Image 1 (cartoon, rainbow, N blue to C red):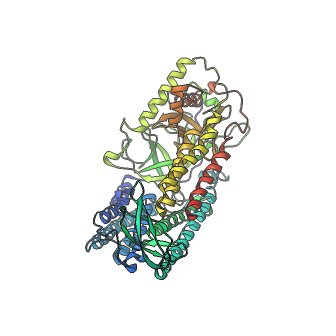
Image 2 (cartoon, rainbow, N blue to C red):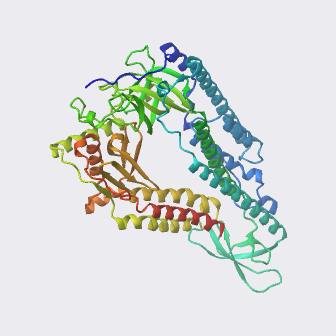
Image 3 (cartoon, rainbow, N blue to C red):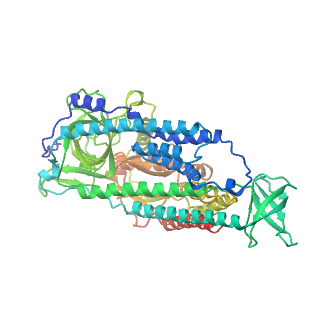
Length: 637
């Protein structure tokens, strides 16, 4: 077999050991670029709860109503927590603003010293983040200087267009951002209206005394009997708080059916928490969608680039090395390609000129060649073998890596990827006990077992794996009803956290987990694999796949570029253990691995287009119905 020729490549500056050392020196306190800082608002909340000495009862209308500024303090910490948790690279302005607000908002934190301590801690965290961000910007400026002016992409040198598609339009994120923004506005309006209406009614209400007649099982609610002024009929009211039978309770009543315990604190913090959470999600989604939109506009025919080497780690991730270092040199960055954003260089033949083409994967002739390694998953770059490459500054935070395979026929591949700084010290990859090593061992066992049972390579029939149809159809609505009943029971007090946030986040998350475990279908046929998940169908050709494995309770199907998709295997494992059936997750992973690595075992027929995904419409309807119920049941209380 002849080697693939080297495609025309531009002359790009080289990443040297000296430049790598300069980059490492500029990056200070790199570990702060993590989600550990999210513990700062958590610790602040824990201290506030521990030192809160606010009595459960109050004795005057003014003392019973918390000001808006005081009620907004928990929302400030919630917004800070969400931003620090969801954004790995966070601006120093977030903890700085949170610290100043905790200092200036009246009674934001209890005690005379906790506001000052929290403010100082937040400002120190902001200063550390500022220094870290300044170092990152210096490192990026050094790389920009080293890269110099833009150079042409490999396909531009051949006079062709890009084989890689533009990033998809972020319409899903834009819709979600609009929904979260609308929820934030509605919660803000309803919260302010209900708070002001309660204050106005309380100011005009009459004060009467009632007697506790019964207490519920939990002791958090009580039934009180009272009489209106100048009336003899007895009315009942439900009040919150720990009460005892026979206790006298002061009530505020206005004669129209509205009432409230006069000694019950009125705090609009739950409304502020909902507004903060929904608004934060909306802003983060808007920023993410904006980055994608700008990225679509900035792709041209050239970009700054570096000449580097790449090496695959034990877990299958590409590491970037300087060109003048040894093979065991510490990696500088980690490159994680996207699964469907790859292209390969196809040399000229009798029918077609040389060109860069999309849709990665080896040709069938090359897969059948005796020089190919049949004992390990096919990969563009061999583990531990540094190869030459070009690293382009693609769009935004995305990069374009162009590298060659270290094995015959030395194909060249271009992949859009995310580049992150490589960890150092004990966090460096290579531990044989890590998850990637276990998955590789499982894949090797699958291939060995399949070769032992099918030495002649008999083709596998095209078929669909999945739980029984009746179970897949019933799981979603039954789970939604049960989760709704539980959430409705837990939301009896009617607060925002118990009445809305918990049903949306916890209940919605549980429903998605149920759909992931019960609603999956996986089809194998002549064209590849199709997996019906929670809300959509994922498809991949055999040329795009390397293996599948059952690990950490999930069956994952692996692309050649290391990206994954899969489903939760717990329900299928349990049902197969007791009842048997064609849905053993271990057997599904083994068959997908065998078909991906042994072309002669692939099915000879194709399944119909709608072979999987028949229950997707039901999953979407149930999920949308549950979310709509969660919002409606709270607003109608």
